[in-house]
Image (cartoon, rainbow, N blue to C red; front, side):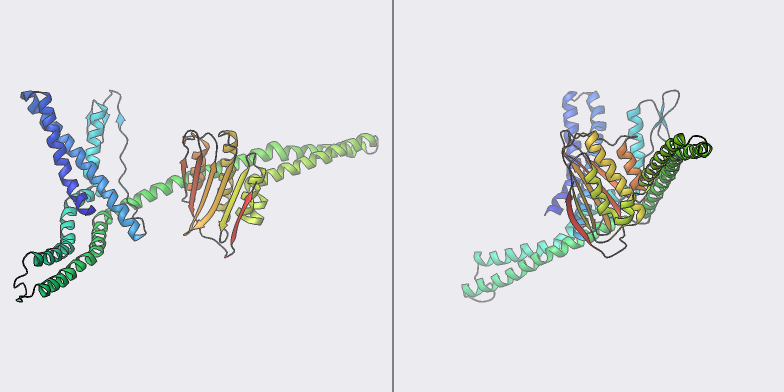
Length: 439
């Protein structure tokens, strides 16, 4: 029934919208000549807009229903619309024509995109094919159901000689049995009709070679972007390491070398001064060692290398300014590079919770399901976080994008803020680590 209503609405509502719009415009202009010229474009715009809305919403609803029943995603991809460009004269270029007004240019560009996009074309075919498909698929079970009910009810109206018998009870029994069998057969055929409708929708809306090419193009563009981000991030990291070594440990080691040379000359003449310089050299060597340890920790924390992501995240919770509760469920260990990316992402999010959100408590959930690593960081701060172009969250998105990961943000004003990171992940060992910790 829902399928039938949706199919009928997709055809009827655009027509009604066009008719009512034309009537309203005609009344507004008092049925004069101007009203006639205004009715046609107004009705066309209203009809096309309503048609597009019903096509898109109907296709999305059907696609979601079939995806839920099949337990898989289709990965539908629409072609990318190019941005409008404005020339020096102020005209807007749509790719095929110039327009003075930006709104007109957007409308032309959208119409051109809708006519050329393969997925939109499939949704248009769906608008026309869906009503016919619903009629054919629902016709059989509905005919059986209503036929059985009518057959059973007709015997109660006139049971004389219904089966060539004069006995009313026998006629009622026979008609009830036959009508019941037909009705049950109609009800039993309903799930079959729904499954066939899903297969029909998958055939029409699921995409074909053009859709596969669009998905492949989108995938190549995404990988190209993430590769460029990874190369830039690696180059920036190498520059940071070089700068830290040059300004920190290297400078201290040079100073220690000069101090040891001075000590060598003072040993024969002024041993007290030599001992004082020796103590300074020892202190400088300790500071250089600490800087090297900090540098190594910034590249790949020892606890992450030795004990894995669960204990590394717990250490972050223990050292965080905000009291943090950690829940980890990992049936193994991710690859080292992915562990490092997740570790530093969680570290940055906890710092943001304390520094920007004013949080009093935070939660970190790490779990692995269906070949994907899912990390959820929640805080009870004031919320209102945004994915800014040069912000830290955008940097985390680029870091995860190297591993084909994604980040989603839910941060209403007033809080709480929930940030979800999800990455495809293959675990390397069958060990299971499931625990909770509070920091």
